[in-house]
Length: 241
View 1 (cartoon, helix red, strand yellow):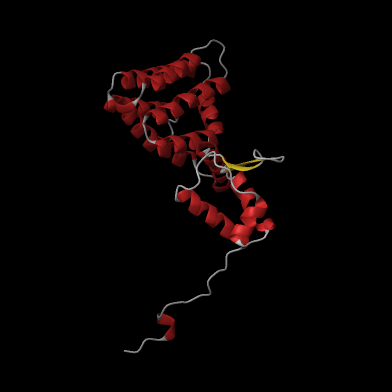
View 2 (spheres, one colour; view 1 turned 30 degrees about the horizontal axis):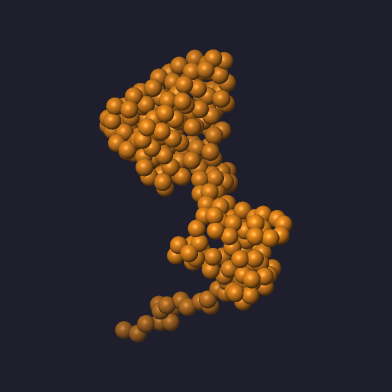
């Protein structure tokens, strides 16, 4: 049986990358290979342009993209301290990206809560097994700040955010910690609204008790109890989701 031309592969012209995209790809290669690390300084624009065979304008555009992504920090002036330095601030950069995409995509609160439930129940379970003394101290500090008199919803949310970020860090998984940091920062408005919706300030006491239970389970090294306490906390905070 013969095959018509429309049944075969659909070959299309290869898209030619713009010069600054090639520069980005080359820098990424060096980072992935471990030849560039946080704190390392990139060559100057002229030297980098000559090494890569592109214009200084292309190098400049690529560096601006990396700076906007939080990968680079540029310093002005002359001498050895001038130029672009690899920043290595993944949590802040991810928060910036997530905040924009949450706004653009209009992710539903239900999806956000479900994502937090998956991440944080796992993190609490792992934290009960791996939390170090400094993590426990920071968790206690956050809970203590939630008990301050005349606390506003914004102040409560700040302490609550710190608690959940430290919880993720205590899991021992750097990717989970970074993702949680970005996710919480990008949906902070929803968290404040949730506290107010539950009836401030009456809701504060119940929410503090939730955090006390989470902390107690982690301190006691009880993974299942820690995960269940986080699950119940999120259910209380977002009863409709």
